[in-house]
Amino acid sequence: MKKMKINLLSAVLLFPLFCSAQVGINTPTPQKSLHVNGSLQVVNELNVGGNANTAGSAGTAGQILTSNGAAVAPSWQTLNTVSGTINNAYYVQGTTAATATVGQTIDVPGVTITLIVPAGKTQTFLFTILGYTTFISNNSTQGTLNLLQNGTKISSAYISKAGEFSAATGGTVALTNMPVPVTFLKSVTLTAGIYTFKVQYSAWLGSATVNFVPSAYTGYNGDNEAMLTKMQVLVYNN
Image (tube, rainbow, N blue to C red; front, side, top):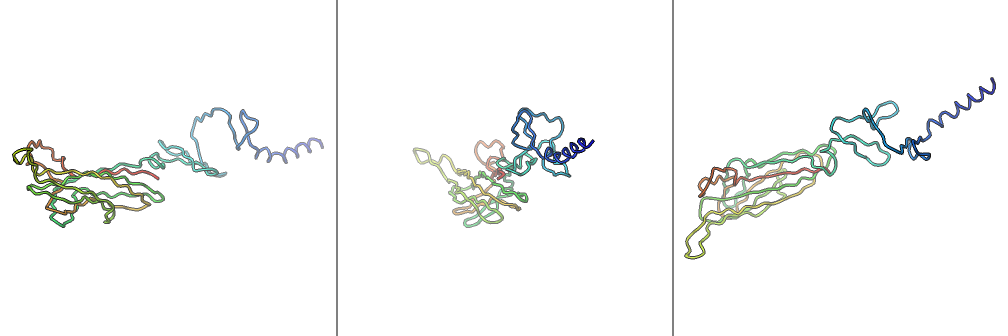
């Protein structure tokens, strides 16, 4: 009986050591609390995080498991919030026509968008802007399309219209009022907040119209989107 008590006491004293020991499956030298040298099958949910009294998170349908570095529990994340992925894509285009005279700056109707960077996030916005300006006259025009962020210009591009093109011989006018389109890019990286972006036109020389519907052009086939200003925004997670 005495010997049995000694063995029982030894087992009680050694039990915490066994509980805190590393366990290896198919390996005699486990490197972590549980080391599996082979495949692992999870029939039900996989929980991460938590503590001794709280179960970890099983995430939600469609989320992916991402590492948060050494000694930190991984976490479930929605795919379009993971660093390096595209969070979203946005597109706006011009609506009604608007005309600017020399020295005037106007908003391009319809080409304004408000976007939100979530709390705790940093995102990069990549803009692609396409625009035309024209005017029914035989005079040339010059100006700029401008991209504004919360009312401050952050980029611009030169845009023009040629009044006349003459034929190669004889000096007879062959084409008139030829708009020269412009496409420009801009990238900005922003912290959490609300941002409004808009496109404006500044007239340098001559009056010019944005979002022009070329119904008076020879061969016009009813395409009223052909000369609208267009803006696409790709949002990347950092």
